Length: 358
Image (cartoon, rainbow, N blue to C red; front, side, top):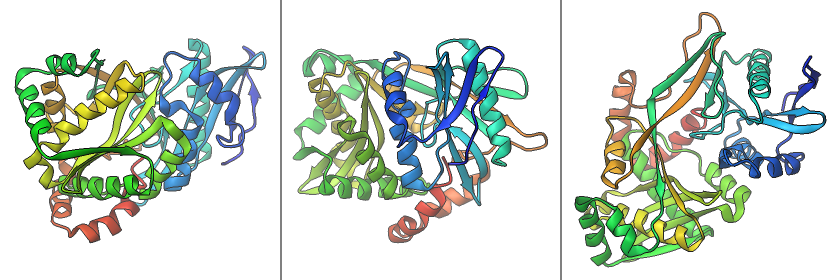
């Protein structure tokens, strides 16, 4: 991590980068005490991104009177294909500025932009949280929507909370010869990566390094696990989920082509709702999707109502913002070609590309 000396502002606020592994204890306690925190604010998340993808962490902490007053987890993303950016949080759908008041939040945004300059990263991306306006910032509220709703009291109530057509698909899945496995061991990790890699190849996108998933599971402990659906012993759907603040978030998941036959994805999410309820969770966060996509429609079919997500981007003068969305028309030929790659080749090439998406 590049050194960043703490500077005292006129308002008495100091901001410095901390090592998320060595100095993360007090920061983690502060984050967990905040109702608006996410798992992406945890120092462990930043450390796992650095370890799993080789993208350095620059975790900024603001202090006032010696006490923590705000945090901003940042990953310095470098990609030969997609350029350089400072991202909060790396490989996350959230994790932007978390602060006690607007003054501290503004100071963190200012410090992050200064850090981007020192690191020669021409773009700074803040995902959710307190968002700065003016001074070259661009706010987007149309690109993504989030899907969150309370978990029901039991399985019967959960089924009734699902709209009729989708409920019928879940009932069909419950009648098929499928088994549900939940764990964090090597069998779970191998099954998840095999399924996830096949799923994203079929969508035309490169797979993340397995090291990223390994690092997350190791860093987050029992706040992350894998649920896998098997048919005749073969994994056909699998999801790595996060648990934080009473909320479950199925984060990296997918299914093989065989999963459609057995409605394995439908069973996977229903089984995750049951599992999360047993863990004491009260909220199900289906993650983000772009309007107009199949994933967006799928989540609405489950009865989730989309809510716009707000992100902020600032770029150096004369520099265009990064475009890393595979749905962008400029990538249509690459997506079509990637879908035709043999899975072994996609799995070899994919991590080298995907580690730079951030």
